[in-house]
Amino acid sequence: MISNKQLQKLAARHGTPIFVVDHDEIRRNYGQFKKHLPRVQAYYAVKAEPLPEIVKTLYDAGASFDVASMPEFRIVYENIKRMPAKERQAWIWDKIIYANPIKADETLRDLDPYKPLVTYDNQEEIRKIKRCAPHAGLALRIRVPNTGAMVELSSKFGAAPGEAVDLILAAVKEGLVVEGLSFHVGSQTTNFENFVQAINLAADIFKEARDRGYGRMNLVDLGGGFPAPYDESVKPFSVLAGKINAEIDRLFPKDIEILAEPGRFMIATAATSVVKIQGKAVRDGKVCYYVDDGVYHTYSGIIFDHCHYHMKAFRKGREQICGVFGPTCDALDVISMSENLPADLELGELLYSPNIGAYSHASSTYFNGFPPAKVVHVNR
Ligand SMILES: *Cc1c(COP(=O)(O)O)cnc(C)c1O
Image (cartoon, rainbow, N blue to C red; front, side):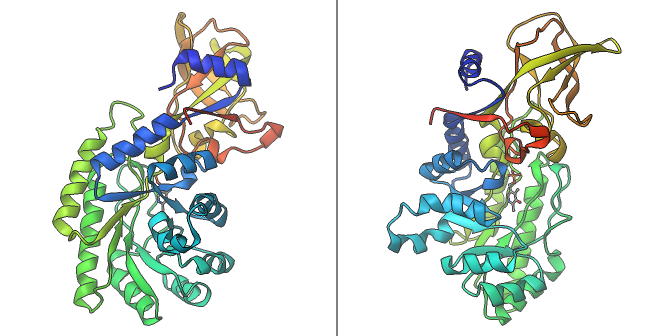
């Protein structure tokens, strides 16, 4: 990890706010994923943090990618372009899955020449794919329990298990090829039974499809949801991996390809935000710090990701409950109403938040004229 001294040096050199990305930590997370889930190919979910430098580091480490828009596709394709032309096509499924179940006509037309692997979960999408991307391979996204996930994803996407095989056969009838199944157990899933249940559901659907005459499915995509160790309540990744390995080995023969789409797991612990105190007031007896980054920027995950980040000071002092607010004029721009911080911090002093890599800087805006934090890469 980056030391506090290094963070302060970087803030002195680059100014604040900064979003410090540690590429050694990204490689470490990828290594942990591969070590504990050796049968699973990791498709990094680019939306968690789409910086091209991060995509390149993961590409070089051997990762594949889950994209959900053409701009995300192009960020990944920049790396694939380095391959000789002949190998590119053979590689595309190994390297990219287009995992947005709903796609615009134009997107499908743009994707079709690449013969992509795409997800779908409804009848209209089958017709659209047939019309606009007949060379695509398909993975059916099924709805699975999201119990206890920090971010629930099952109300927006996923075919009900009961209609899954109908949707597989409907696509096949249109002349399309269904390669397998995908699901998402919900982001930051600390209830590991979600994975167990989802894998079992997928195995049931494989069997029903075979019984009804379709035996060509050869991949299972476990989606995302692998939790980042934000606090001690998150059980070790090795425990989750043990459960997943046991289920996939029990239920799927060796020639069935298993992939997953970890976003948060790869990047959450790999970035730290450093901010500067630029205002201070005491309101209703509480010390309030006003800093130069907030919920319209790096701390956007407080709103969109239901995530809480800790604010830490670089020096000790008599701690009390303080408020920390972002720079915009919106009263929503609150980082924390109750953070344990030294009460005697002065204007110009720095605060930092570790483990802020996922769904944070990725959804920064320019609201109120404040630009996103400057990105600083270390250990590239
Ligand atoms: C967002 C998303 C992911 C990544 O989820 P994490 O919880 O960050 O691992 C994976 N797959 C799909 C389809 C997604 O929408």
